[in-house]
Image 1 (cartoon, rainbow, N blue to C red):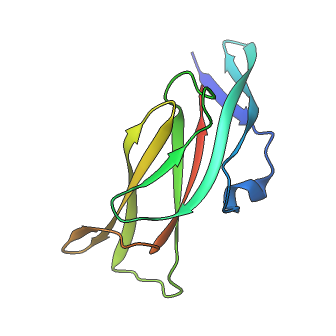
Image 2: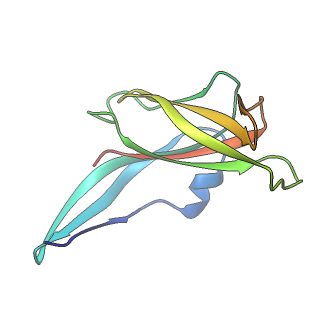
Length: 129
């Protein structure tokens, strides 16, 4: 049986790139399985922050999520120079209904080190599905 899930977000796209207060809303979540469509509303949040050495923590409004949300991360390099010999890799080091902590590593051909302060901007999208 094929299973297809799609999200219809009720958020403006510029919310993903606004620094400041976390933006939270309800999104329509639709599941398709065996010709049956199930619709429900799911809480979600988007936020952006400059990376802080040791990990960047995003705190959610109290009681928004009843369980740890599914989190999607994107990174934006703050340097204007693009390097083909290094990449930034994000990992979730802690995730709960109250907050998510992201650690960013800089990977080169020979080393893996933690990113420096303000070296990247971290964007998150968290949704409870």
